[in-house]
Image (cartoon, rainbow, N blue to C red; front, side, top):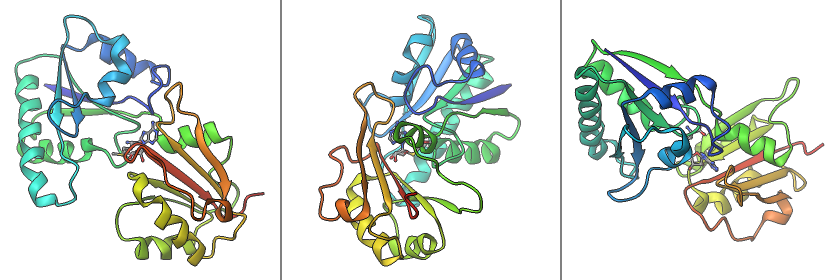
Length: 241
Ligand SMILES: C[S@@+](CC[C@H](N)C(=O)[O-])C[C@H]1O[C@@H](n2cnc3c(N)ncnc32)[C@H](O)[C@@H]1O
């Protein structure tokens, strides 16, 4: 009894590992996360071309709320649903965008499986994380030499992030573009200079998903944040070089 969690990269179907493609092609059941009933799963759409017609696909709901208590029921139910398919002897995979170890729904599923179904073996297949996809699209490095990088969510306590930003050379912000205007203000307060490089992208691997903005901190002040709220990512580099 084994479950594979497969990272399917940042959105480009060619940015998957060979291992990921082989597992997807051979799967009998594929689970993937979505935010609400009826909303297509992004992860499933990325790998569509590799899914066999006979494969069963199912989206599992992970509502986009911050209250962990109200999410617990979803995590447990989703983990049980996956476990039941694994127990029936099928080849089952759980798909997630980017890498499963970075801000992924997989982390909650993994924890519940370990608690509730400890006899199920688990293997995780890494994927290309969005932080690398944006760096490559924007043609910037994330860190070199002795530089320090932080990867943070934009939608929680920015006072806490300010302390981190003050000690870092590069900060990557994930999760919610609505907060990017506040992030720009915070970066100035954290000591990022006006010429600090800022790259902002939405849906970084979509064919039309070019880098929206490749600017500096001063130019970015007062601009409107990305229109697409959720699938947005920002890199701020203190030393633009
Ligand atoms: C739940 S986290 C998942 C991160 C993912 N596990 C990874 O390794 O990139 C979702 C956030 O990742 C970022 N993200 C993931 N894929 C992206 C993409 N293709 N384009 C832009 N941002 C992306 C966005 O900030 C989004 O809100």
